[in-house]
Length: 125
Image 1 (cartoon, helix red, strand yellow):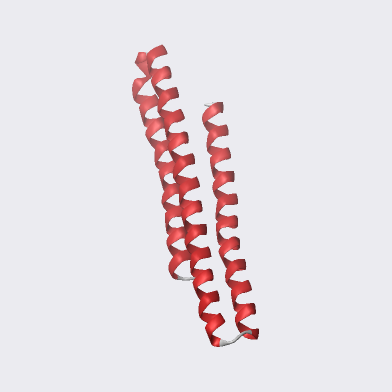
Image 2 (cartoon, one colour; image 1 turned 90 degrees about the horizontal axis):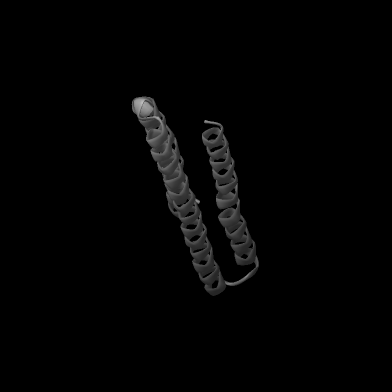
């Protein structure tokens, strides 16, 4: 149980750091693009807008990739430890399975939040 708590806390901290970095990186690229368009002609402004879009796409792709990879790693560890626990104590199978499913739901929720943030980065920022 201690390992599950540590894994969940680590996953939540990584998700929080991921959210901050994925929100800040495209915004700084967009800000830099806006600053350069103010001093250049309209042709250069269109090129800077393309660079901003590319930065958003790269930031969103990296963020959802990291979240999905870490989520899959966390789910794999959770299922593996649950299988070990059930093998050691078959009479506690119900409680172990319930706890495992609850943990997987929390991990999957974090990955879905990362997907929503990535979509917001692409279409809103």
